[in-house]
Figure 1 (tube, rainbow, N blue to C red):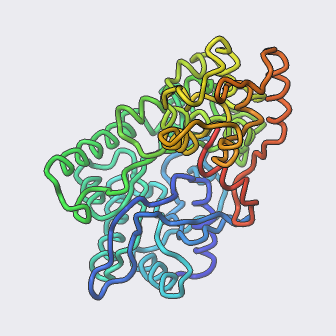
Figure 2 (cartoon, rainbow, N blue to C red):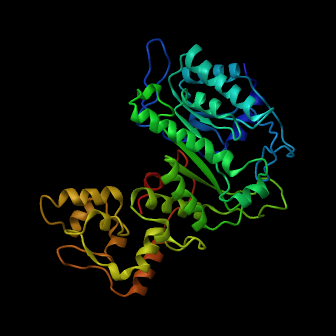
Figure 3 (cartoon, one colour):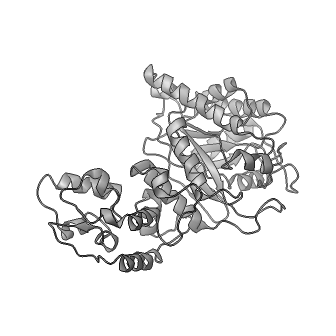
Length: 419
């Protein structure tokens, strides 16, 4: 049985990886087994001391052979080290599951020994969970850079989701801050996983037997290196389009380790928040990165990305909500994706007015400056006044990491990305 000190070290070391969330998997329980991965996903949150509620988040080891400048577990760091066995992890997972503490597992590890040896032990762990302990719950496995492709594919048949964290947005920054990693060691396994998923889909492989049914994700550290938001989002767009990623996570750099190569001040949560908003526009609102900002620019700290775009394109507004196509509605500040679809559906039965929009949860404080209803306009045509109104409302934004005690309205905004 794992001792309390090892558990504290390895869960504390894992808290900086944010690449885990809803599963999106349909892995069901089998006769005599334990758990299932619901299609609706696994809900979880972080407590102030780093514990993950509902999803056990742990490293197999924090004794790393790599010396990445930004990593608290780097080889040269003076921290407590610990390593646990596959059996200890399995017993911990099953014990926590039976006590209803968790519903799934996020398993990662520092690279100890060699990348292949580390990957082999991670695979042994999930094999034991699936076959010996008959655990059918959600498992997210962090891939090891430079591990053999055959090992990665073997792991992908056992888990629900995998992630290879890009971490730094450019090859130049990787060479400077993480010299043992390369762009290819991260992107090649992503491409292999995508090809395997496409093969399974084309050949109609049963979902429970397919590779990573919940897809793959990655994480980018924001502010540890000098890349702009434009460069970060350009990479994000390429990952979504070329690698088929389900999600790119952004982690605001926090100066928890000392290095002359790193900034002394963190990037701040507002910058991270703006990147998530822009990411949502790319995935669900039909925006290209070039429309949001130039590659040499950073996102506005005053206005959310959709408002900033709308203010630069005031000549396109106002639009009539009763006739505008979906793609146009999605570009109106204050009209989220759900609201846009509600408008399209409601228009089939009659004309929509501002009262109807309020019931659809459209944020009229923003939207009224960009729309008309039945030809009526209730905003202001003065662009400076519109800027002032949006700026005033933007100051009421809450930019914080979610906890299980967040206000409902704050949690809804952060989870849905409505802008």
